Image 1: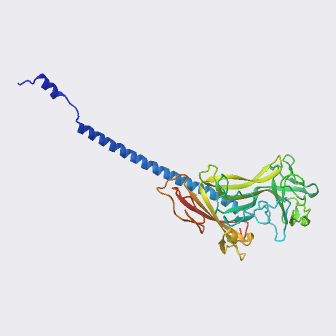
Image 2 (image 1 turned 90 degrees about the vertical axis):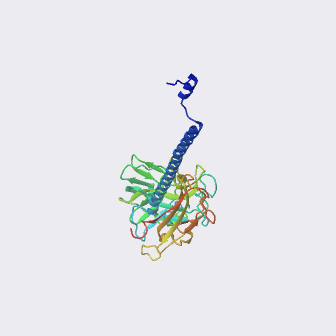
Image 3 (image 1 turned 90 degrees about the horizontal axis):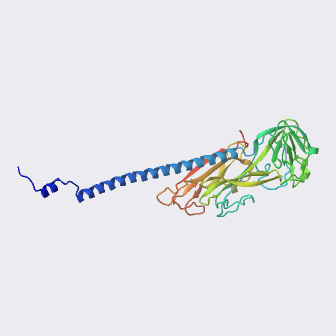
Length: 373
């Protein structure tokens, strides 16, 4: 048998890969890694989109729930007063946020209406109002009711049937079958169940201890010493104003709510704004008018076309929401119809020209304390 030389035998026994095989392996590996990265990126985009849509829907649902609850209860008080009943407001204030008997529901059209002083001006700072967005003021009695056992107008004192959680400075609503009145509590005592409503202290304060008749501080001659007898009801007075403003983060717009804030030590009550939810870009509102007292709205109009707020029995709210993040491939140039108001990337009322996804949420709400229940 032929024996190979040692040098040839050693060379023949060596094994390895060629440069072509290495390059092929690297290429296949890179393709595999690229595919995995592509799947990961697609999954991440899909998750991000789904999460943003879910957050947008959740924000819209919560916003509508809050607005619906208060709009539905506008004008509520625990007593049903006859048509000739007396109503009295003894608060030293002409603010629409305390004018329960004048208008428990009032809207303001963005860019057209003159807004109450409690609303912030249009601007770019956190909390400032957004141009072109509507607002609404809702006045109502609270849901926690106390029964009056005794009322002494001379000493400006109510006695209640139970211990209470009322504080000095609270704005309160009292009523019976014939009369109703609004006043500010100046001295409350939960241990002996009393509520005092004197004059000369507090803000806005009371102009009179008389919570009867049909009048207010502008004409006190129409106020009288009506006594609210046993069985009369007392509730907290609640006042809200909803508007769209610049978010505290500064990156978007938010739904804000003005609500009564009471400083019991100073016996003061004033409206304070709080940010409820981000990523709500605009709010448009129409009001259902019942012209023939049949408890059905004949038409829905903007706030500046309402001639009598007592005829409003329904409210149609539209919210333009967007996703928290920019998840679209290109800038949004669409025009959205928000309860008959066009909102586009350009025009009278605009949305941001960014890559966020947008959607219109709307709801029609019956005002329960107007017309038939």
